[in-house]
Image 1 (cartoon, rainbow, N blue to C red):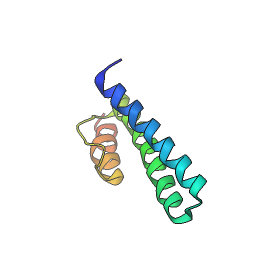
Image 2 (image 1 turned 45 degrees about the vertical axis):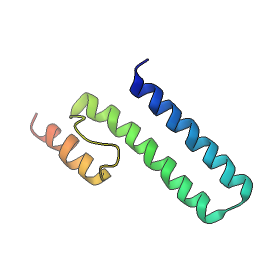
Image 3 (image 1 turned 60 degrees about the horizontal axis):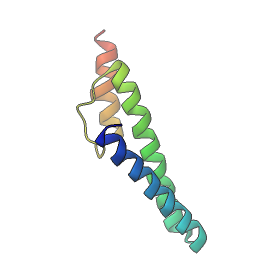
Image 4 (image 1 turned 30 degrees about the vertical axis):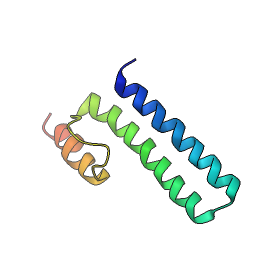
Length: 80
């Protein structure tokens, strides 16, 4: 397991802890923000996998999703 895998696993575990805390505290607004954060992380994981197979991974996790799809995935698919 690589260092990146360890970091990603730790982030995922921490997000799950935050999600559970917000649910227990019944903070609807924060729960919504937490849900969006979790959803974004799941989307990033999926895009990493797709870009590994069909594009490039020359992007950071905070890159706008639209830019990832257009610049690092679609461009590669179109140019094949």
